[in-house]
Length: 56
Image 1: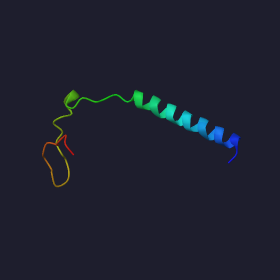
Image 2 (image 1 turned 90 degrees about the vertical axis):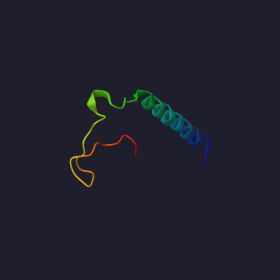
Image 3 (image 1 turned 45 degrees about the vertical axis):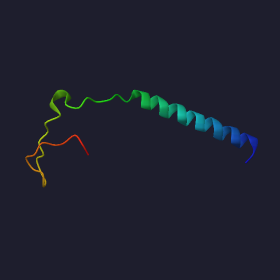
Image 4 (image 1 turned 30 degrees about the vertical axis):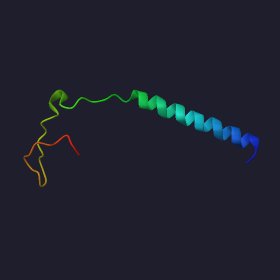
């Protein structure tokens, strides 16, 4: 690897990191229970007609 390739590699990595941090800053947290989302009822499957839990 020569100096030119190395410099291009460094600059591309810096651009990637800058882009990642920018997109992370755009993500907003969601409130649990906002707009009635806390009491979802499961429609299909083994847990049918049960309220969905927020824990995983």
